[in-house]
Image (cartoon, rainbow, N blue to C red; front, side):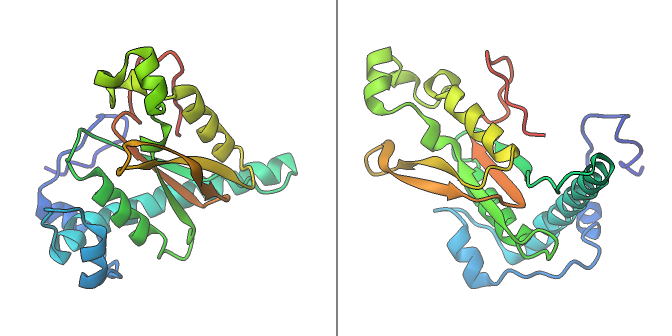
Amino acid sequence: MNPINSIQDALYFAFQREHWAELRKSVPLTLSLAELEKLRGMNEKLSLDEVTDIYLPLSRLLNLFVGSKQQRGLVLDKFLEQKASPGPYIISIAGSVAVGKSTTARILQTLLQRWPEHPKVDLVTTDGFLYPLADLKRKGLLQRKGFPESYDMKMLVEFISAVKAGQKEILAPLYSHVTYDRCHDEHQAIRQPDILILEGLNVLQTGLDTPIDTR
């Protein structure tokens, strides 16, 4: 049975790997083995065949979504007689610890930025939005580090809102896995990307006091 019926019919679709791989539709593999070795995490076994079968169809689907969003934006801007909106398409990647979120995010970033329609793809991890260690200790949240309440959600929401609004430059906080703390003097500059990939434990968390809309 063809799993693709109507997007309104189901929240999820199930695919056999062979069928999913066919949806690549001859999209060329632009990733070399040397590049893949740099992108995958420690102790992760990911082959070029898996990139071809799994990630290339996904990059094609996302490219179609991004193109559709860009076209809708052009139509709306023309109707409103305004300049083109610089807001990016935002992709959120969530999951538990050590499931390959970072590798998935890095591979998608590399593949997506090689499509000519959206060459500028930025990747931001939510680690930088963890409260500083001093604040976690003061709030009694050190043992809850990584849980939703240990993140500065106000800062994260304001960051996403600024990116969506198309501000020319927004600074994202960085996190050090050496000190296990937010970097106080280093930031990642986000300058109007075509696509922003947001990766972290809780980016799709629901039931928060301040919901995040990354559509």
